[in-house]
Length: 197
Image (cartoon, rainbow, N blue to C red; front, top):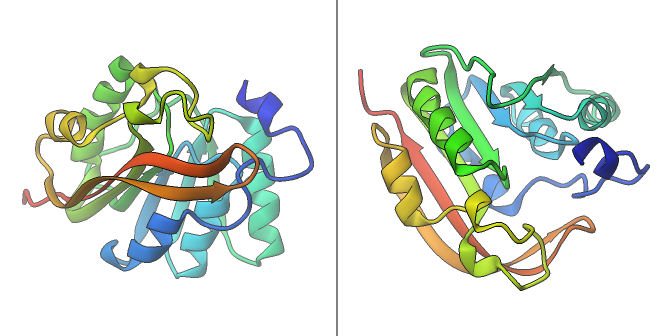
């Protein structure tokens, strides 16, 4: 599905960074950042422009090829890794930041990934996320129609034990990102810190 979606010349979700990431990027300590399900590179390129060392992981080789082109066009460097998040090794105490921007994963895969994610963050490392909530169903403005792929403040609290939330909000906001995110969306936004030594 994702290779097909990214096969068009234009960027499916645009080339500008996600609004929530752009507004809160300063919460992420400078250093190494991992972007989960990065797609075509808009957020990875933005982070690289801010001085981060960025690794973009995605299951779509087509999306990552476009991410590399976008990085080249902006004269920044990103590392692209073609991998399925169900099997990707995040490492331990590797990342100053990990971001997840509209990363729709089945709950069973997501829960296993989040356990690895907590261990993968360095002490004081930050996880930043924006995702659609189940209230998005039926809006037709993005996110598909599977509740299992969506998240909420409650699900994040239960699945990200070991992190301390400094920001956790469910809200409605205009999400205008390319042709697939177009209109008011019901989202959850989170920033959480690994406070364990």
